[in-house]
Image 1: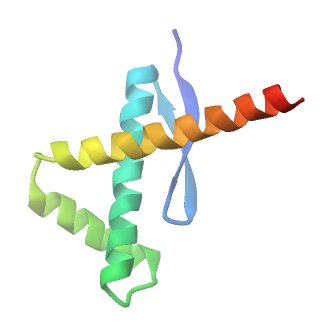
Image 2: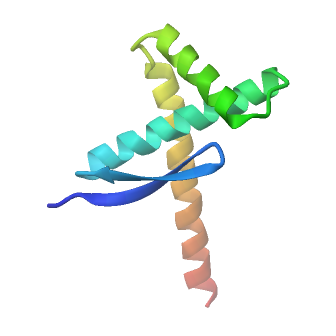
Amino acid sequence: MGSKTIEIQIGKRTYPIEVENETEETKVKLSAQLVNDNINKLKGNYVVTDYVDLLAMTALEFASNGPDTSEANESAYNKLMDDELAELNSKLDEVLNS
């Protein structure tokens, strides 16, 4: 199987990312979700609206927390699954109502 390009959104920008398989795609999506969740948390805690500043603060926070992010990964995974289930539910509703 070859690589494919997916698009992820971080902050207000969309980035094309090349992934090799579904496992890598899930990992990238989870990572993007973690970054976005942290940006939203920081926006609520500080009077900062510049996304470059929010990304820098997120990078600093992630780097200072070290590699143990299992709780954050689980939270991001749950959010990702909730979003995907909501999308599937919407598609099912469309099919059933047509």
